[in-house]
Amino acid sequence: MTYILSDVHGEYDLFCRLMDKIKFSDGDTLISCGDMIEKGKHSVRLTQLLFSMKHAILLAGNHEYAFLKYYWGLMRQTCDYDLVLQKLRKYFPDDGELLDWETVDRMEALLYFYEAENFICVHAGVPLDQEGRMIPLNSAIPEQLVYDRIFQEPNVLPKEGKCVFFGHTPVTVLGLPPCIRCYLRDGTRGTRLGDYYKIHLDTGVWMSGVLGCFRAEDCREFYVGQQT
Image 1 (tube, helix red, strand yellow):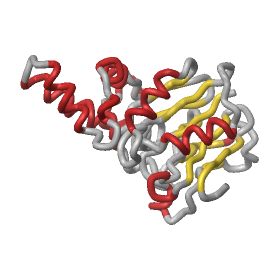
Image 2 (cartoon, rainbow, N blue to C red):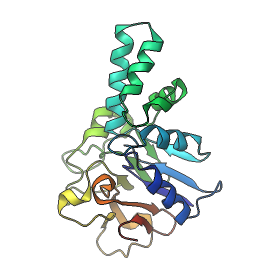
Image 3 (spheres, one colour):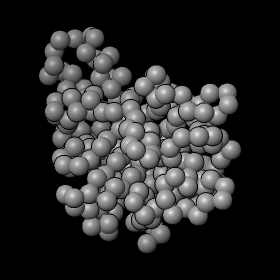
Image 4 (cartoon, one colour):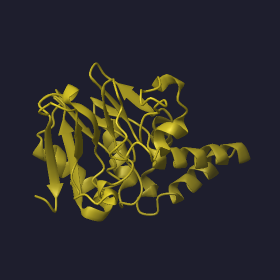
């Protein structure tokens, strides 16, 4: 089974509870649409757990991108790698002592989008042309994919193409409860991914205490936290 989530933001305990709830195993695939780090207290611990999972596809969000820009800036200033790692550890005040170079290198190698046969995963949104069609993602710059704030709007719907999973902005900002928001195509029932324009995954876990994921094969949602 394929499970998709976004914006876990260092909530290590809730993430583990969610994996237990769905009975995640080595035969399953997890896709994280970015923002694994910050806001919660276990950014490095959570990131290292995700990197250790055999079948995890991990994307960069705006928080990982900001960390990487900070890292790249430090590397331009000095060749003292011990000093760089010391400063990077201070970036995460709660568990930064766990940070090592392997984790930094793997963060630098994060994807900015992932495209499967019937869906696309991205952090903030996909670029659209003036007619609402998706622009090829390999032509988009990282900033478009991690910072987009237009795609979250309910009336912004790709006219054609695959279902798009995204996060970045909590659904509560749109005045919705902290649950996954699915945008159905007209005349469909929501029983398969092709029925959806897009699926907004960010439940605002760091504010709401609710973390959810979506299962691609049967379009089921799973939650842990204050809802459960």
